[in-house]
Length: 156
Image (cartoon, rainbow, N blue to C red):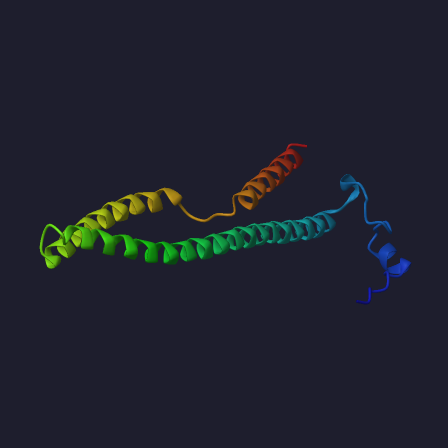
């Protein structure tokens, strides 16, 4: 990428800024303060959004991997459960008719599924919203700093 050439010295002197752009705040006029504040606010917002995006990408990556692993474990365990259930039905079929053994095992499984659904629903309610906590905390700190700086500037 090519860098833009530095501004000529006459252009920086025309607006009354030092070449490094770091004059004391007390010596700046209102227009310069507003311009500088607008630039800094824009940079701050961009940085906070970048932090939130990076945090959400990281969380989404971990969530995706976890979901894939849980899904794979669920499929494999389903085959294992089918084998165990078949064994339970065949064992009960020794003491009652085959259809009765299948009905008992089916009813037991439905009861277990109902309990799991109730427990899962209560867990989902505890999760809350997926919020990028570090970015939100940073934005709150930045807002507090800007507010206190504006207040101290007014009190001068």
